[in-house]
Length: 554
Image 1 (cartoon, helix red, strand yellow):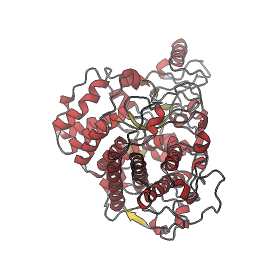
Image 2 (cartoon, rainbow, N blue to C red):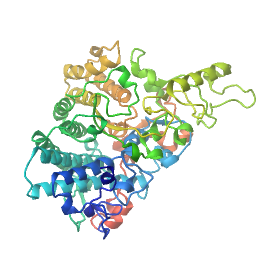
Image 3 (cartoon, one colour):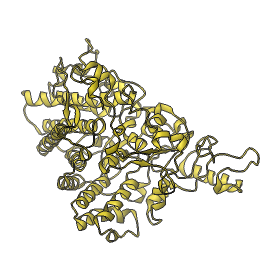
Image 4 (cartoon, one colour):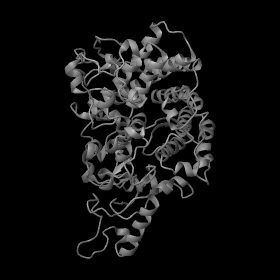
């Protein structure tokens, strides 16, 4: 089975870097599945889906040919949302995989950047796989069965997921623009060569298609077989709950508040909120009770130094982390009540041990031999003792630097290693927060409070939702709760676009980020006033697609 998964390639989608380019490989790998064979029966269609599942987290070139080893799918794209929006803060100038370049907004703003090309390429490859399955099932002559409907539901869900990702990155935000006229992305339904290049559809057209696909997915899942029970691997399979969760995200991003609330409630029903021990376990496994969807990373197919935790977790044994421990915005952390156990994963008093720390307060003073960290300036023993205590608690060594406000929310199952861990995409907590925001935007104060109450009371022993009794106070609190609960899980970029909020690391006493390190990204105007929030269309796509010209560039 692993060999089949490793080489699951569909000949009709062996394209080079862009989705619309008509430059296809003329040969089929010896153990690839041809287009006709892929659609011959349910077993082969499931193999196609398994390839897409793995393609979500693999190094790009191993599943979707033409990629680049510098990106491993959602290992990169998930934390990128918090890296770009200033939530996942760099404490030093390490730049492996261009992670600092991303943070400084010097990558997605360039049409030739690897990030712009590969995100586009990755999502359109998902769409082409989905089209293959959808068209094959709808136009074929296979007998309808629950299994076939489940495959069809997953294909529609994948297509909706990919288009939502594309339109949210390469187009102006729905709520801050003019979706009926704003350019979106090319809308493609083809699954057979030769592909016809398409121009950019409008944002509204893309959103409409996403909605249609999600409704079709839900309808298919209702007639389909249920997702099997088992270990973390089963949650890599999409089901009706994933479709409802994506529908909640889609509706929230377009201001369809009632649909967002209803879909969020439907999505979370079978996923109880995590308790304290689960929440502090590291967010490294689909086994967590409230995980609705995530990639189960195959042990033998690890991405090593291309992984999510390499970029974001302070327990991963890689130079990006050892030399540049990631910290949280101290304004956010300081606002967390002491009665809220989520505060425990942010180590406010961690000593600054990094001689390369961008705040110039790291390591020891060469003249006095005392710590430069003002919290330990006259007490080397306390500095060393606290460092040793943190090392012991979180399974790291002195080869890992520490920094005030560093986090241990994301932790390897095997700390201090490079072992692979799962990548979580959707949790029940997000669905409570979506419902709360949607109801607050409808000015349903009691409804929003009731949506927040289960989550708040689980996390904070002194939680009292009744103090948030106006729309303004509720929205401020919901933003805070999203910031804490979903920190490091990649939602910062789309949240800021939806709320039309900029980035200001200097405000209210400062985030802890360095203006010298962050450069132009230290303060960024809100999305409605700054088109740099929109990813550039890849230059390779403009070069290849006769229906997209330089004048279409964002």
